[in-house]
Amino acid sequence: MRQSFINTIPESYNRYIKRKVFIILLTALLTLILSIYAINAGSAGLSVYDVIKTLLGQGEERFRIIIWNIRMPRILSAIVAGIGLSVAGCVTQSILRNPLASPFTLGISQGAAFGAAVAIIVFGAGSTTNPDSVIINNPYLVVFFAFLGSMGSTIVVLMLAKRFRVTPEAMVLAGVALGSLFSAGTTILQYFADDVKLASVVFWTFGDIGRASWKELGIMSAVIGISLIYFMFNRWNYNALDSGEETAKGLGVDVEKVRLLGMFMASLIASVITSFVGIIGFIGLIGPHIMRRLIGGDHRFLIPASSVIGGLILLASDTLGRTIISPIVLPVGAITSFLGAPVFLYVLSRGYRR
Image (tube, rainbow, N blue to C red; front, side, top):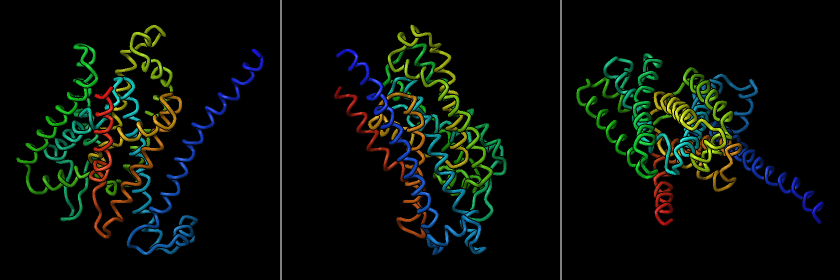
């Protein structure tokens, strides 16, 4: 009987693993299918056949321009940005032990937006080419200042967690206060800006995937790729932190180092994405909670699962914004906020019921 029980353990564990892998692969497949639809959707009159021919290098020149110069950068940027924001939310929820933590709710995104506004208004990093177009003259300067702004919020949250031992709920409230503070700073900068710089900042803060080009996509991909490698390397440390700080220390985890570097990488992701595509809220909250419900809290699988669901959600939101009242394109930041606000309230209410 004992031998029979031992023999059943590997098979049950294999089923446990296969289910998680299947969900991750299924989500990735749905993202691929949605990507094909997103390429086809729009006012250009593309058919699926035209899309496939163009992707294979046999389409008409006008289709090639539409797909490779306009839609592919947008679609890939939505996937990459969604991956980054969702995995940043997953990690911050773990290292702060707070289910409501994410770059948006902790004020990191708003801090990045304030830094980017400083770069655009004070240092002239943004301008308009015409009333309907905004360009970033120096994206590296914008990223640098956005990172400084996001790190300001991160340092405050870490100080509250370490020095004053505040509760998880208080950390989220501190993030809301910091977000309000940075938003007020951005408003004051806009008040003293001229019309061109004001238009640049206002349009930039809408949260628009369409402004990202192949160059911005490359920078975001590099930063997020390096961060994902780091997060996966520390996946066991995050699992240990879920059991409590003292337990993690007992297992040999350098809690302070893991927390500091984790918040640093999450801030870097949020600052780069926000500087290029504006404020996109709640992806870091929605994605990890959906996957935690489906596959559990094991970060060996939760980190990649949060990544793929984040890309799927943001791509779906952007596609919906492009097609729901076409040819008018709604800002994706508004769409994600509509989706994320009910989830935030649901998670908050569950926490207080407990």
